[in-house]
Image (tube, rainbow, N blue to C red):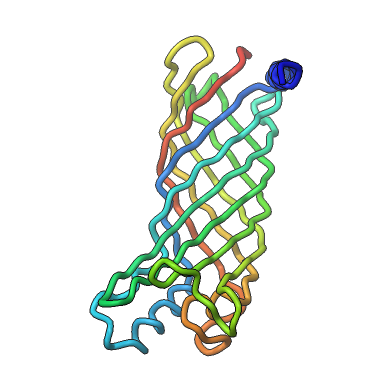
Length: 225
């Protein structure tokens, strides 16, 4: 166990020696998906007996980790991994319906900052592979569709633009507020309508485009240039 801890510390130290910057993000995430909105709206319309309508999947949280490689240029390269979570819950008499949506992205980062002209301002362009998982529970138990547990997985691509402003706290530590806009032109998820509305091909396509906006804070550990 001691050897494993020492190896982990050495690996972390060597990783930081070739990194210009580590970044950890925490943010509020707003989502718009036309196909998923249509499926939820159809669910509500076809069930006039429910008093509390099912909310759209629009409000969520995101966290991410970025690793920027060392370079003397204004444009630097890196890698990014991010996770987002969205939840829609409606509680009616004898019926609690909950939708849980997860996203996991693995991406390539182009980090740009020009200190001599725009000190403190940075921009990231992130191109990612995107995966999703949509799940539904009724009264705390997994919902079954066609005698199988209801779940929908998806795969697609994502491009996002992020802009922030550094505030130096001490030594190598910085904090920055940021805004991010991301677009997924195509996320293939053929079972999403079945999870949401218990139908397939009635109201939605087997894919969807997604637009998200994030507002949050980034914690930076930066090497001196």
